[in-house]
Image 1 (cartoon, rainbow, N blue to C red):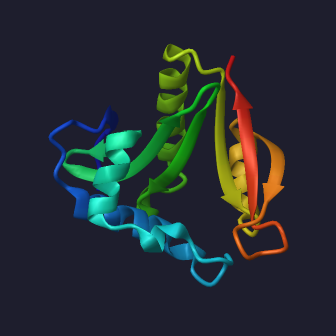
Image 2: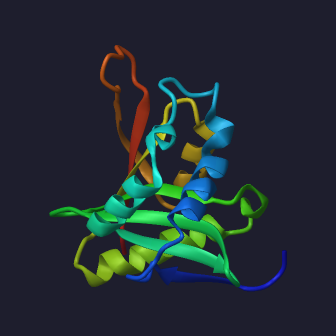
Amino acid sequence: MSGEIVIRRMPPDFTRWHDLLGLILRAFAYMDGVIDPPSSAHNLTADGLREKASQETCFLAMQGENIVGCIFAAEHARHVYVGKLAVEPGFQGKNVGRQLLETVETMARAAGKPVLELQARIELTGNQAAFARLGFVETERTAHAGYHRPTSVTMRKILP
């Protein structure tokens, strides 16, 4: 697979929900058996993604017609929450995730939101380190319902 990666806002007439779901499931598959509770990606459906995209902004990383990454951004009063950042396994480590996050940073600044926030699972220390290299800092640890130990790390980035 060669060619330039282009980041674009999901078009209003997007119909490739099953392709997007497949991308997310492939990108999150390495978490299976590593994180507890299991990833919420397992609960996603094509219809659920369509609904999510109607409430949040989604950006796609495209190589030609191939979707190689995505990110969802939800605007809140004082920050933008980043979720479902997914990069096709063969494209991980090639700055696609960085490009997607930078696109959300630009969107947040334009909307007057000075902070990005995301959550990483407690077991995924490599993800936490990667986000730290991008300027995110841990702000709290939280537990999923029914758990008495932290299961997630909340990280924030103050935008310059």
